[in-house]
Amino acid sequence: SDSHFPVPVSPRHVDYTAHFPQVDSSSKRIQFADVGCGFGGLLISLATLFPETLMVGMELRDKVTEYVKERILALRVTNPGQYRNVSVFRTNSMKYIPNYFEKGQLSKMFFLFPDPHFKEKNHRRRVISPHLLDEYAYVLQVGGIVYTITDVEELGEWMKACLEQHPMFESLTHEELEADPVVKLLSTATEEGQKVARNGGQTFQAVYRRIACSS
Ligand code: SAM
Image (cartoon, rainbow, N blue to C red; front, side, top):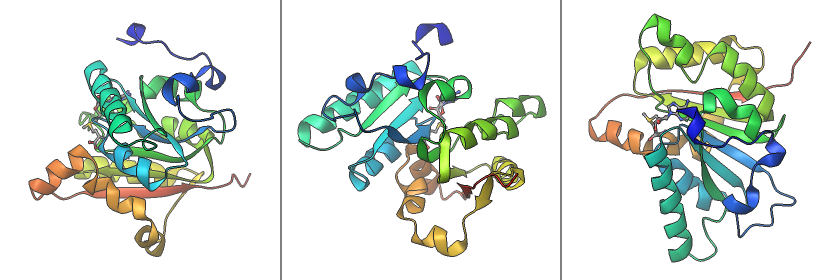
């Protein structure tokens, strides 16, 4: 349960030195968050694609978080100078996003193959919801991007509908999706995406940009 992990009281209390010991973090803030990162495949790919960007996974399961931590530490040892920009938080992202990130801090957020919570009464437990999108809009900078993907068609429609209906998000165009190298990684770099691909399954993605508030 939640009581077993410490939560920073505010983004200023996030321990950057512990998570990024080889980075001068006095001038840098985390910019990418992979929410429900699982075993960390996406982050590992992003870390070398964006070597100057600090990024974290947020993961609820203790053992999985420990695995990702060890995986990153090992990669730092075997690849000197690399992977120093990536780390993982054990946390409940549905409760504590504002404890970790300031207003407008993030440029990318990822919600990849989240748990579906099929039953109507469990929809409030989905990681994308109208209410949580308000929080994500708050921590994202204008122009920041939300990436979602799932192999569950109903959940894909739900995530897309929530984003489409939210006043602070707009869909990327087909051309923008084609031009963004990160879009290709959503299914190829994640463990869940690889599993779906092996089984020949379909995926449903929604990629939206945080826009300025017009009112
Ligand atoms: N994104 C990864 C991938 O594509 O391979 C993992 C997908 S897995 C199906 C969903 C992950 O979200 C699980 O590892 C689960 O523990 C995590 N998760 C579920 N609820 C969460 C929450 N409230 N906060 C953080 N992580 C959560």
